[in-house]
Image (cartoon, rainbow, N blue to C red; front, top):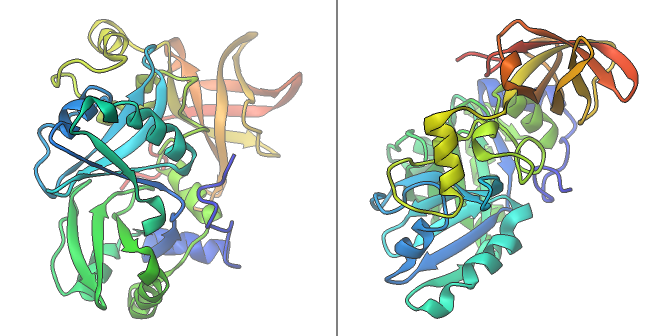
Amino acid sequence: MKEVGETLPKDYGDLRGEYDAIRGGVAVIDLSDAGKLQISGKNSIQFLNGLISNDVKSLRAGEGVLAAFPTLQGKLLALCRVYNLGEYLLMELDAINREKIFKNLNRFVPAGEFFVTDVSDQFALFSLQGPRTTELIEALTGEPIDERQYKIAERQIEGARVFAASHSRCGEIGFDLFVPAELAQKTIETVLERGVIFGARRAGSGAFEIARIEAGVPREGVDAGEDYIILESELESAVSYTKGCYLGQEIIARIHWRGEPAKRLRGLLIDADQPPQRGADLFDDSKKVGEITSVARSFALDRFIALGYVHRYHLTPGTEFTLKQGEAELGRAELVELPFIKK
């Protein structure tokens, strides 16, 4: 499995400094290996709306939405962000899903007036995350910008035409910059040089991973995926219950209106000498009631923290579990509400 991005090293030599940029300044994170698909044609919105869990029909130019491609069982095939750019839709998704979703969408092209183009290699993607991100972007572009989640606007940075999409990836203000690939190096150098006064610096996957776990953001292929129903992964914001039919809707709607998921993604404070590995089990007495999916040592809390799935009858904050790796008992885990760090 790839890390956050194959273009992204674990760190740039200063893990703590990179984390501090996320929490206090601006972290510049290279996610250029992300999938980027251009969807156009008279029937593009109609076709796409029947495949994903959120409503794209209501999007106006400059607006976006988080959505999921569900399986027939309501589980997560892929997450995506869909932006309405007026002339076409721009879809951004994790690199691990790029080829899979491109092939999936291309099945509908022969139906007419529905065209899908993989533009992943035409654009670099730099994600700016941190409380001073808006200030930096406005200084770079000379224009105000909307911080509301998934708003997108065209801007100019030193002559480069970019799209800036508001996307908080780890609990802070965030923007994804879609930059023409041939101008990527020049643009990112400008961002870093002019961003010094805003505390901007490059950050690798290590700092990003700590910050996103602290924020309780699930990662595809780790905390969310085809093993889990979308609502189990706390991705309710990716679902519309009024848009009409789509693949997997029946199961998702039934759970939402008539019950609750069998398990849910939750935060866990870990009391152990060593961090548990992904897949470590949570026990209540002799009964297994959950498992760990992500672990990090939090700089903010100075302890190990984790994300994991817990059975619905054991979701009370403060509940303690015995933590086991195979037959070995590692320590204790306490369930807490997410995010770990409240803003």
